[in-house]
Length: 219
Image (cartoon, rainbow, N blue to C red; front, side):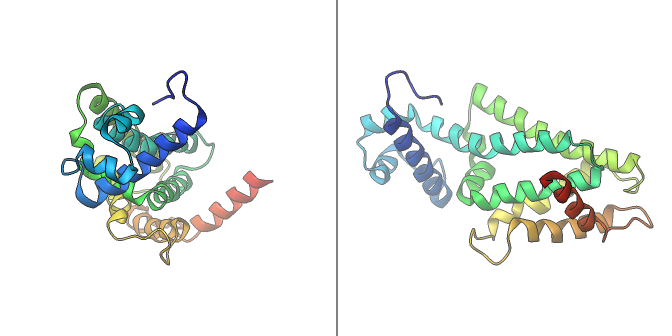
């Protein structure tokens, strides 16, 4: 939600702080079970002052969803457009998705559990964005099959396998835990690609190609 006219930079700082606090509270006890009074207490604001910053409780849910999907879709579109083989792009997408999850664990919890509380245009937009991300994954899987890197698979089932392995990470991961996004992506993709690949495909060589891609990109 853009800053309304006439509000100084302190307004936006406070609003972002409230969104952070709301995400933590919703993740702990659920969107439906959290009242405006509780949100105001955590934010240190009376009800009227809270509405001044957020407009409505649903606006908070929209902002949390946007913090998850906005950066993820931007990165996914960029990765999908790269002139690289589809398996490498899936590896890059995997690490990006996991980085997003680990950076905003409370937001991801709300994203996965509470999106059904969105209504009307907000819900329609969210579902459209989710479908776009799913299609990016599906298209890369199909491309990997077409190039012969992957065996013939049911594209939708393969997409669900890819997403389910990644998307449930928030249930047990910790931001400062022993495994970062790069490590988890390497392990996840080794498992997935070993199952997806055609006979003779060099799964172990994927990490070498990733390192070469990063060397080219940083040159």
